[in-house]
Image 1 (cartoon, rainbow, N blue to C red):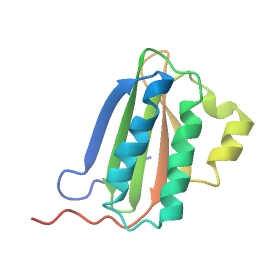
Image 2 (image 1 turned 45 degrees about the horizontal axis):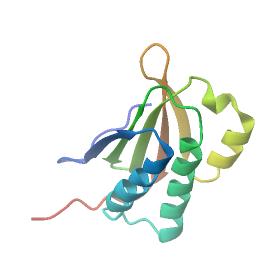
Image 3 (image 1 turned 90 degrees about the horizontal axis):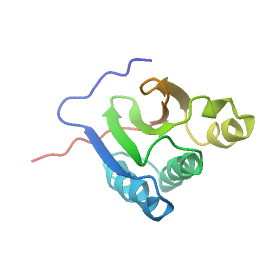
Length: 128
C-alpha cells in the first residue's frame, strides 16, 4: 500500500532497546506525534494500546524501530523488527483490528518484519 506524503517533514523515526524497561519510549513519541493530528483522545489511546500489544510480541535483535509518518489521510506507524508471521496469530489480529483502520506486515530484511498500523486523522502541519 502506497501512502502519499504531506508537504514538509512529517516523519519521526526512533530506535530504542527492545527491553521491557524501554516500552514507554513509543508512548512518549506517539503522544507527541499525535498532538499534530486532530485525533480524539480515545483514538490516541487505541493507537497506544495497539503499539503496546505489539511490544509484547517476540522481537528480532536488541533494538526496535518506531517510525511515525503523517500522511494526508492519517497517521501511519511502523514498528519492528518482529518475527515474521506475527499477524498470523488470530488473537493478536483480534486485538489490533478494532483499534486501528489497517494492520499490515512488511518484510524488514530476510528474517524480520515491520508491523504497520494506520489511523485516520487530519494532519495539522506546524506553522512558523
